[in-house]
Length: 172
Image (tube, rainbow, N blue to C red; front, side, top):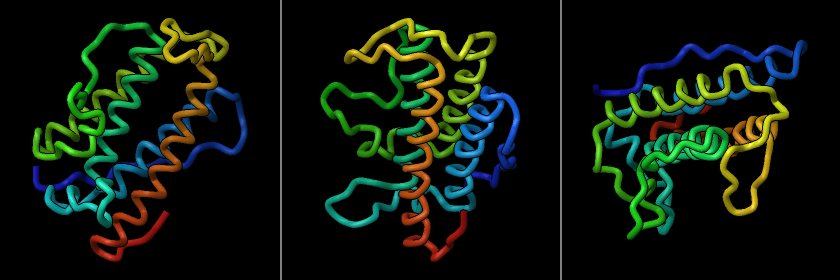
């Protein structure tokens, strides 16, 4: 894989049921992050912003893979799984060890993790609380959706700046 393909990005609806709105906005931001990464080479995706920051587009993609897994698979569903891109010796391994896997592996794992998150939420009410409480976070599925939308929106802003530094590309 030479670069990430541009995803189909569907605008979320401006009306309708709460669940449809939350899922729509989350999927919109998932696609937005991929759009910011689309068409760039592996080396471009690994490019850091400015020292001493370790922020890169590839790091953001890896970070959001881990965030998806942490909130939906581990906390909401209570599954005991090995955390993606974790290293007990380096708490920031998600941003630091960018050569540990290929672009195709990072991209495929991100897509698979997002799909798993969707499946884990199917059939669950927005008021349902997490199965595993970590750091005192006893939250419901609604709160997780809102948190994930906020997390993606913030990091898509970072991705805008990183992409502009790489090839002067801007957009929404």
